[in-house]
Length: 276
Image (cartoon, rainbow, N blue to C red; front, side, top):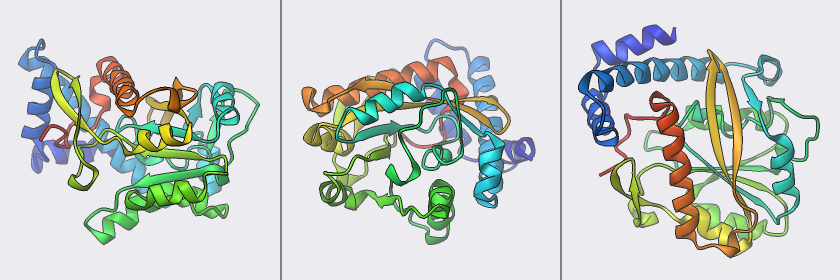
């Protein structure tokens, strides 16, 4: 199904094809056009798989997701250490791998170790409401449904996150933020230097709160290892965000994201207009 969807998106609808080529060409100026086209083809195949997985994911039960082993968390003990030794944890996610799995991964994870400190009730997923109410409900369901099945109300709209974190500042929680999108005007634009050979603006709200409340901060890396199977590693950025500035934290985040994109170029969401 994913291959069919990829072919339709690329060849019939030409879904943001020019945007993909422009983004890739500017991000990889050293590559020849044929190489850029090959990455674009791999990207659309990857995108088709994500759409197919989202359909399956949205219609699956918690038990079925848990048994599928769709996500393997690679460094659980390290994650537990960062979680248990800070007031709360801020996780900066990306649009690599299947980003729609970011909210529920601790509910249907396969562990590489035995120790489990973080449970579903500890997680809060931050999201930006989509303009379409229908699509907003569909994708929000995919992100948080597995946690709601076990009784956790975990989604927080981005405009309410400061109020929410201050209300829960005495609770140890995990806050997961999608971080690599283009800043929307209410969040403000903050230059963080060059990313993928282009001057880039970022939103600092997530790391600003982390600095204020001394959260530990980790980067979410997601690698597809097979159809419907991912490996997730949370890479440490710092144990106490109050020792760094928001700009320094965001710079580290974008350096890690650039490394991940260079490692697997097709794995990022090239259709979004990141550089406006």
